[in-house]
Image (cartoon, rainbow, N blue to C red; front, side, top):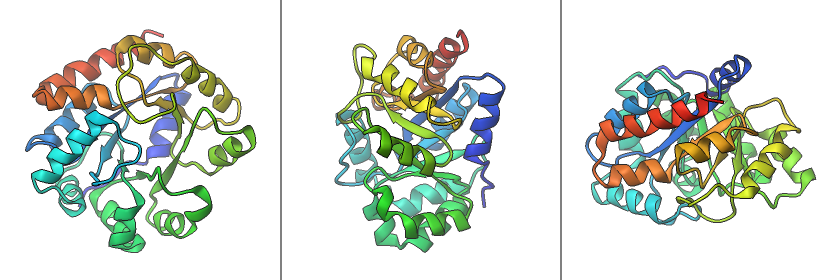
Length: 261
């Protein structure tokens, strides 16, 4: 059984010491070396890692993550096999699982929370579960010390944004641009705007995700936010065969960029 590090405590302590936070996303079950990729991005300076559990109807995922998810599913990846793989190792950074509520519901909330606990996962992101409907899930997760991270979009009104910020655990996931995940040629102006909005509402770490594609964009986004989530740009490199070494090189470049602030 893997012993998970606390997501919220780890990120809050790093923020307190002035460190910009870096959370890469990888698709669980993508290739036979996906666990080695996870270790590589931690070695490259990731403060936490978001592990995607593939779902056949992903409402938030763009073409790159969809392709990665389909490859993983085609190779036989399941929630149980992905979490079982995580449970076999111990990692030097906290893990957060990103998936869709259909998977949680199918397994049963208590059972799924138990799987996460056994796997050493300390955070979860369920983008299709409204905050008003997550009472049962949050209770089961809290009993296992699993923190539920909530997303806030650029179009979210201030009163609802404040509610989401208050309810979010681990960190606040600030959606940098409207639309599905994917690489962008430039950082959207909405990314820095929402960063400023949310950091004024909370002392929790605020991380910008969706559309962070290059070290330069990560550095720009981190000027207002506490850090970034980097997904599609990394997963594309994995789809192209970059493997653990390619992942290490790319995340190291992001780490150097945000450390330069």
